[in-house]
Length: 489
Ligand code: ADP
Ligand code: MG
Image (cartoon, rainbow, N blue to C red):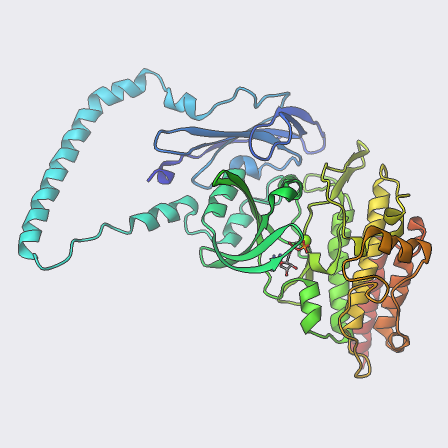
């Protein structure tokens, strides 16, 4: 009943899209790392959370000037956006309505007695009818009330599907308003554990009959949850080759904190899982490679304008952090280590996650610690290195002339199972070794092109490597020329 009575009220002020003004805003809520934040829009969200009519307030900022978040039409939120320094500091919305002056008390005095009298009459009539019924059908079990629980549950998000919910919130971030995220998260049922990562577990869950993936972070990796939540909530990251974000939630259970990240679920699992059990033909290999580089380019580029996004480098690209969708396209997951850059202010946000990337995929400059940590370009160059290694993993599982290699992780024949930093450094920096590229690959047009890309992603000197954009263009050209040739035949 309570959720049914949640009110919606929203107000958005839209300013000129061309002037980019940033404001200091008050930040309050589980997504805040500080008491203030800087953004293009300050916001306040409010929800009545219990019968006591407690008001739960979150404050913060949106970094894109997109205002749909400010005008959610879901029956559960009250959102206010404003555009001046700390304008969201002392704003309250429900209180002003709750405290609506004398009108309310006047209404109470006149209408309330009548309402009470009518309720009393109805109750009396109901009781009378009930007694009569029970006398008549003494043998039948007691009638159960209408599916009360179901009505309450459905009222929270209506009959919406995930698609409906995500479609109507193309806000400043990639997801739903915070309180909707929390509500969705708390309606998820965990079904089965589908993976254990270094720092947590991934479960298949169900939300209103739809599969979702729930990543449960261990408490020692809370910074990854925080970072990923922050990026998905402040950057518009909807792209077919980036794992789709649904909700993020922090709950307290048995005095410990539980951190959840809910995303789209992909039945094929990670590219690592997929390559263990499947082989591909050269076209399939190209499709996997092209989809990954499209995702990486979308992360790497800064897009300007109202639907824009900052540039992002992933820093932990590997086959386990890439998922294979049912259409055999990949999407990139795990933004827990990502760094964010905006050109205008030359602002590099490295976050403060103590986690480091996966040693097996570390570029030489990371291993010998010569990487220029103050330059955003450096991080993109390490992603390209890792992309080359992923490409090598895919190519090994590609059938050429009826031949295919077993799945192996990069450097499998040069370092032990769980290599140390020193093991990797010796192989990659001191001995300057690279994964072995079999001669058979050069007999295929696609694989020989991918071989060249690998080699140019593995230069010792980071600046000599290809850029993600260059790789995307090369692979697109390759795909187009193959399609053209097919049409000509
Ligand atoms: P790691 O820490 O090794 O990167 P993750 O915690 O990101 O691993 O994920 C562990 C495993 O869970 C993945 O390798 C994959 O098999 C599975 N997984 C992760 N996300 C999803 C998803 N959205 N859909 C299906 N399976 C997933
Ligand atoms: Mg991962």
